[in-house]
Image 1 (cartoon, rainbow, N blue to C red):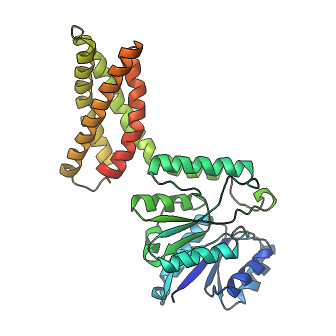
Image 2 (image 1 turned 135 degrees about the vertical axis):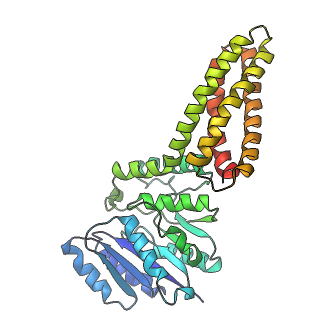
Length: 353
């Protein structure tokens, strides 16, 4: 049977880390890499004690470099093992004891049974013991991730993860030095169509999660900046195209004032969308999605989407106008804003890939 390597990043860990690692060793985890991420001198004895275990290797950062860097250095260490092919992969856990040994075993069993998926040990944030800030923050992040990347996950910030050996190279040079790195791993899985599977684990918090080194302001900003990075570029591209579209729409409406409402809206929608789509395609292909797919393949799919979106826009605007009498341009702004979000997902996954 193949082995797994435990990877534990630690910054000023609790004394209980010694007993926790001893429990892992008892359960058969005999390859443990502990990364001291620049802990204070008063914690050095913990690492010195654990370094005496033959199952444990301690890798030290001279200064605090962040959880993301600790994980990347650990993955790099793993990929340089001469016998790495004897391993099914890496299991990462946090050093604060929030991941029960029994849950780590369950994740290991899943990895050994199917070593071609990325596994998450996912907590249940509906339980009463979850601190309100953690409940709200995790649920919000999961919802945003689902909206932008199409992957529905209950716990995007868990530190208990299993990385198959074959997938480890995907994560070695990802951006992110602190907690945002773990989010970037999930984004990479989404982009590379890696299967991500969740295994429910116990939800353990000690003293309202006081042991965490997560900074709710700086780390949250880094995570959400990473989540929205590509979407911001899409918004700028779309905003430029949107202004062109609305301007052309209004001009054509005025020019076609003698037509009935339905025809006028259809003509204005087609004309404005043709003009704005040329600009939008060029920006999305090169600047937003940085697609490597040849233009002749993407442009056909792009314009099929444009036509479908255009007809949906015209149909909805006409239907709502006939029922409400609200000015067509106002209706179009609302309708196209909703179609805009849907179009992002479709372009990302199906058009520019």
